[in-house]
Length: 302
Image (cartoon, rainbow, N blue to C red):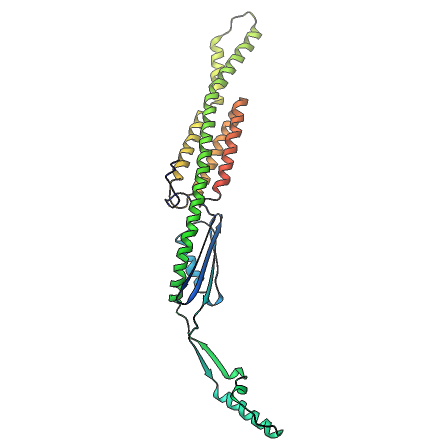
């Protein structure tokens, strides 16, 4: 693989990632944390403060523009550092009723009238505190800026992990190609060995009688046709080439690679079922082992 390729150049991405950003904007301390694990489709969930529930759908729509697959969790924390605009309203009628009732109580029971403003203020229900509604658009714009930075770090981690996955997959594809080469090399030897065994057996049966060479050639040809794996090795090699090509594509490629792995495994199984040679059978086991490791790896590719 070309070592000059770096994360962020449109290569495959892992579905595992993490990104976090904290900023002070417009008098608010905003923190956005994004993490993901592998998932067959795109699944999104968000944790936002109750007062900012309107952010959840906006975050989902925004994240979908950056991520196409995986189980994504976004957490948002917002702490307002500046005192919000508030208004305190007094229920004059209720306050007057309290004062009248207290003075009447003092008169009836001959109590000293020590009524003060601080005493009246203890009756909390005479006050109504109204908070000026916050500008949702302004809040979203601030959260979006922090989310952008968190997403950038999140995607960068997925790309870095994707680079590692690509290197591993490429190495395993190389190994499979070498193993397929061994199958191609061993297959003709299997036919030749069969022909020699057949000739020896016929010679033993016929003793001194002359051997019909054409019959041996015919039998060997029939055997060779039955165990021929040329088509399978060609298709398997082709699938490997397609796999390498898809690794260079941008966007979500995990499902395409998963399909190709199924096809590669199908060809390996067919080679194994046709093999009449212990050496080839062992090579097929090694091929299937590499394919299985590839299958496991691509489960984490977006």
